[in-house]
Length: 277
Length: 233
Image (cartoon, rainbow over all chains, first blue to last red; front, side, top):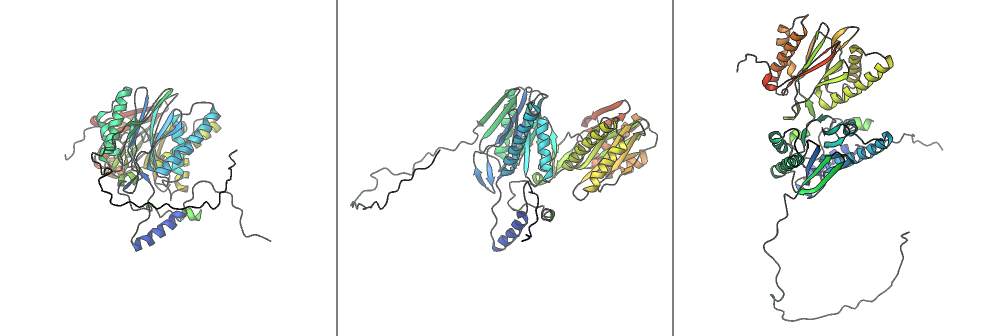
């Protein structure tokens, strides 16, 4: 029997055919008066700065789904390689998966070259992937690391353009953070000064932008050492309740007490050992 | 890939809940720009402003839009930052490979044709206006213009980008053929200053480069060192 199926080579990568369908569904839903659930976006303030011996990356820890905080303590500083880390803003799933894909490819590349990976390599891989998807992958990244040529810092936009700068901010809180950087950045800062500056920049984003909040994570990368400080600063500790709504035992007087035991019969007992080998 | 192609009109995101994401975060990064290239006897002078915008926010105020494609061939980028960076990297690779095959420095015309090939083939998908300029042994200093759409034409002087519209008059009245390198540098600096003054999408510092047989000389003119041109304010 001849079959009608055509042998197509397996298509790798993401498939966006459902986007048109979602558009139609949203139209239908809006007619009835309800809206579709939105993808979780990391509202976010992320930033990075180059100091004398390396890089300091910073991020807030709030993940939002529309106007609701989906995760009060999510981690936005992603591992790329032992000497390279990447902060991610935009769609949470996109930043997570994109950084993981490039981290995996970079590890294979490093085994092939026999060298510690360079930040420029990670930058190329990320920008070429994001450009290929023409901005549909909503990942805005701050990539930083130290390699054989010194410390490097890049900002990468969802459409695939990159900028190599001494200080960068991304995310909805980036304007607040950039204001702090433009005021107080100096070239060749010491580590403590740089950490303080990044902490203040993220704090500006947290307290002035609705999409950013909770704690401040820092990542200090120097030659041969990485300090992943999570959390570095708990800027928004949950308050302690000053009152108690529980009533003490005995507040309500007991008038009568009736105890009725429930008779339960064991009908059937069956023991099955699980094969955990 | 018909399913993917039919999606192109759907540029908006599915969800309407975009209050937390300001407009400038959703806009694509564009080099608003003013770029310029002038030929002189023995080389070329190229110049650009340094502003990259996402909507109304300046994403990078010190951008380098003069991108080396080969040792003595540069391109000035305007339009979408992502598109022009991607094209420039592809062309730099292709030209480097070609140069190794030839075992001699490539021609500026070759670089320009490589740009044209990419810009014309993908003209519907790209927003890229590029000036290719450089020096080679066969024809000396050359400027080729590859605007949006993928045309290719050689011109002795060319301006591009959103700020270029403000300086066509200045260029028409002040450019004269057979200028010296110093005159070209002055002309470029003045033209860019005027454009940056009037165009909101251009600004920052003026980056200049002169390319000749002896190599590439790069210069930066900071905001307070720009030529003072008598104006209405």
